[in-house]
Amino acid sequence: MLLEGNHVPVRGLGELLKLDDANVGLKDGNFLAVIVNSPRGPVALAVDAVLEVAEAVVKEVGFVLPHGSVVSGAILQAGGHVVIVLNAFELIIGTEEGEALPVLSRMEQAAEAPVPEILVVDDSMTTRTLEKSILEAHGYKVRVAVDGLDALIQLRANPASLIVADVEMPRIDGFALLKELKHDKKLSHIPVILVTSLKRNEDIERGFELGAAAYLVKQRFDQNELLETIRQIL
Image (cartoon, rainbow, N blue to C red; front, side):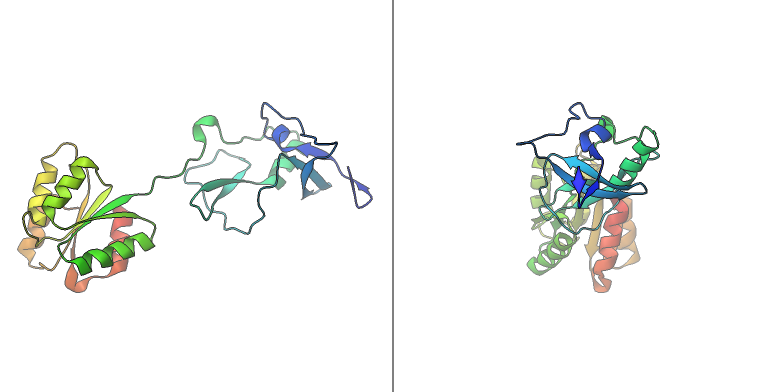
C-alpha cells in the first residue's frame, strides 16, 4: 500500500498468528491496518476492526509464557475484562527472520482469574461494614454474616474462598464455628482468619489448635496486615 508516497508492505494479523482464516478482509476494496515500525521500515498490519484506542498498563498474564511468545502481557479493562496484549513489533520481526513464533496454545488461553469471595462474620455492624469496605476496595467479593450460625447456613448453601471471623458472637461463636467447619468435609478446606479482641495466649493457642489460618487482635488492627495475611493465604 502507499503511505505518504512510500510503498509499505501489508501483512495480515491472522497470517502472522497462523489462524485458519488468514485472509485480509476487504470492504469495497478497503481494509483496516495498524502501522507498526520495524528495522526494515513501517509495516501495515491488517486487522479485522479497530474497537478502541486506549492507554493502559500492561501486566503479566499470571503464568509463564513460552519462550519467544508474541504475547507481551494483559490489560484490565474498566468492566473487569482481561485482554491479551500482542507485541506487534516482535511478531513482525520474527516472521521477517523466518522464525516460527509461538503464540498461546489452546490450553494456555488466558482466562479471567476468579475473584476470591470472602465471608466476614461479626456481630458488630460497624466492624462488618469496615472490613467489607476494606476488602471490596481491594478487589474481593464480600458477603457478611451476623454470627457463626448465620455463617454456617450461608456456607453450606454457598461456600466462600476465605472466612474472616470474630470470636465473641451470640448463638455460635468463632471457636465453635471453626470446630464445625473442620468437621464438615465440604467446608473444612476453607481458611479462617480470626479477628478478635481476645488477646490472651491461651485464646490464641486455642484458635490455632482448632485450625485457624491466622489470628489477628482487634486492638492492634491494621488493614494492611489483614490484606497481606489474606494475600498469603489465597
